[in-house]
Image (tube, rainbow, N blue to C red):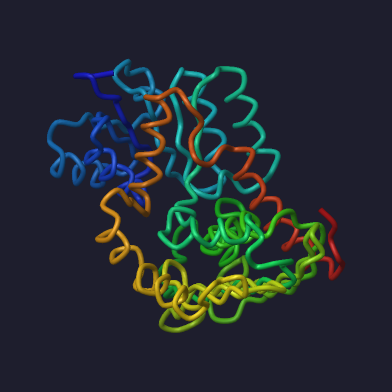
Length: 346
């Protein structure tokens, strides 16, 4: 704690820059330090925030007593190793998605959290999209009736240059379009539709020179009996949409990422009026919704601020390791189904 504020640090200045910006702008925290092995990245952050400390050694950084929270923003397969090291040093930890690339690695984070009693959260910021809370509430309250189908499609695009580093490798990325880009939507799928019991899948490399897939197509069965269709790609030029479509016996809800598209619920007193109201509030994306609700925060800032509040108020972060592990388990089951050609049971 420094000047009455929690000290925040970030390791990995790729997506970690967003974490640093969020911490620097937070009311109850202060950006104290950043760490990276590339000096030019450290210099850029120090120019932006002249008061911070910069480290090329993670072990040296986590010795700093001014640091209360560390964001782990490294290549995906390094998350567990560095998170556990920070936890063992007594730091609270926020881990970028995915929590790691295997369930076994992710469980090491959960074991360390329980052993050392610190706060550990995971970044799945799309749950904080403005339209997601009302969608989740509608499902949970039974307004859609019995869910029978969910369709989820991540139709993004990445240039070949995106894959020049660790992206698209099994060792560091743990997969391609599914594990890296679409894992956020896998998280939303299981959050909205519940436990997945089996998976069939095919994956392909369509348009990139990579080890992993840039296209996946899967059929999932849920514990509820509902079916799910899930596709992911980084070949959909120039980047099209993130479709989230829920169909129940009493209603239909469709969204494109943070933009609500359809809200049809049979139990409504005035179906058209309710849809018009919901589309007016949530049909233009997070930015527009935030102008209506001044307390609404989305994106990485929402998750960083939630993590800070969790430490300050001594409560659990929004997404615990046990919850984040679910999407990693589903993704790896999809890869196993594609590799073997078999139906994989979870």
